Image (cartoon, rainbow, N blue to C red; front, top):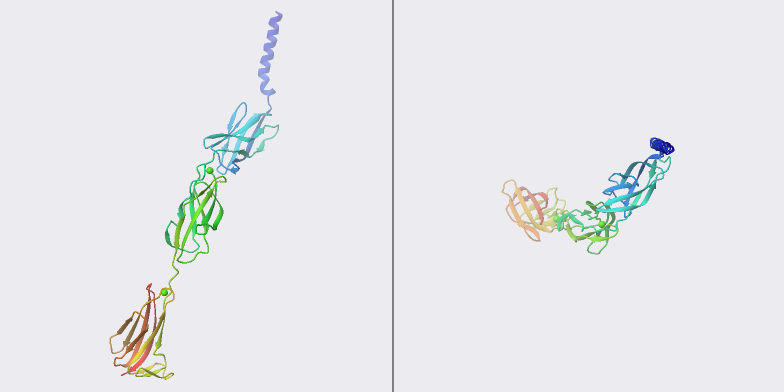
Length: 327
Ligand SMILES: [Ca+2]
Ligand SMILES: [Ca+2]
């Protein structure tokens, strides 16, 4: 009988303890844990982040800037370990969390190191495209960079002719374009360059790319009619007087002289046209110096002498003078 009573009491105690267990273990704490994930000391969004307690595993919400948030509900005093999965590896974080009484928020940056690292891929897809021409001065040069581990990279650009740095410390995400501006270039010159991509462990050099800057804008030629000049009198190709009359007077034949210059492209030809009221145009094409003609046609009245210089790139310029000619 006694044994039966004892058993009943024990049963009662067991029942009571089962009934009151939730009340006894109310020491459960809701909490939020948040922070950044560092993989090899670089803030990185992992594939997964989870927190392992003895009794449960909780997955984090992940953000593309490397931030994570874990909402938990765990017994006070429990210790959780963080695991990061990244590129097929499961990495244990240096940090742990201990659930404390009355603490709802934990700011914990997670650090893991991945021993697994591949060098960045060779930078490709240059701009300006390799061997391009007519490139403006101060061009933006760029390459497309990738890394097998999706690491961030530091990209530097070099002048391939003298190894001088063009631009450095350009931070580029995996699968992005890194660029810099190359200043101090000259017209009509060839340049070569390359880029180096560094994932903070390995460095990879691109091919050497070349381009040629554009030719400086071609200037028009300069042209001046030297003879006859305003105000002068000529008789039989001889200069007689200046300040004779505003419109020069030519009696008999005359040598017309023109000066033409072109400092960049050079002169192709000079065309001299004489246009009179009672005559057809007379045209002379001069392909080399001296740019002069002997005008020996019988004349009577006013004429316009026009000289046009063409340079080797097709630009032209002109000068003209109105004269009177007799005989
Ligand atoms: Ca890498
Ligand atoms: Ca020219």
